[in-house]
Length: 315
Image (cartoon, rainbow, N blue to C red):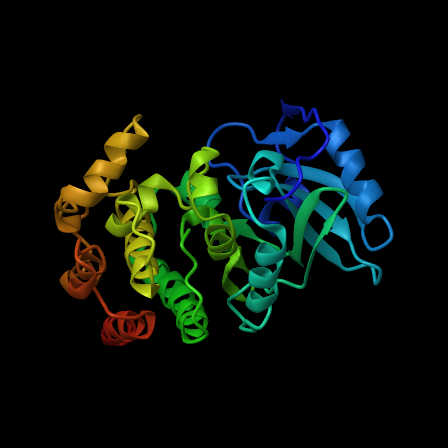
């Protein structure tokens, strides 16, 4: 187990720093909790010889997020694992998993470009990706057209197909992790949930962290199965596409435990009852992605993408 970091750590709430919003995943409701000054200064001291840390962006589910410039002046996003999570993972294995994910090179994936452990901080870096997240777009527009939804879905599925071919499942597909850049949808944090799960084992669960987000978890994730694969991402993207068209995810509740139970045992609502104008083939493709049994879903991202592309071509 990694050594305990010096404390204490303080976090305070304030509106998000808009310039760096799309660089990485961030909280989904209300004001973004921004890391306190102490942590910002520690990050600057630890990484100052490699990056110029400009601002604290927010505090996501697994990490605090900072906007920075690299030595060439390019904008990047630095993510620092929360201290209480960092002590629950084996640092060497976490960094090995991160380095494995750097092999992913795809136009719809935010590439991991650096990582390390400095002054008890576990961190990784990705390029700044301009644009709003899908979460921000849904907050503004509530629901999307079928055309826009299928375009986003196909681009994300293209990214997932590439990752799955390299043996990497995302495990935390949600609107916050999809950035709508001028070049199309970009998936961020690919490889991070895998690195946490593989390096933390049961210590992550005992520390109170869950790998994934309840509303977007597959039934096998909700049940705590250790052997998740690409079909988990297929399910989670099905939730995202359902929400993009219906204006809400299939399952929601103030109780996280209730959502996890629904993910495991309750059939997904009929999308056509919520949004009757959705073409039946598209609704059927999403319904298959949301099947409870892994063997009943699309078996990989490429298969689902081909089905959605066929629908889009017929429109």
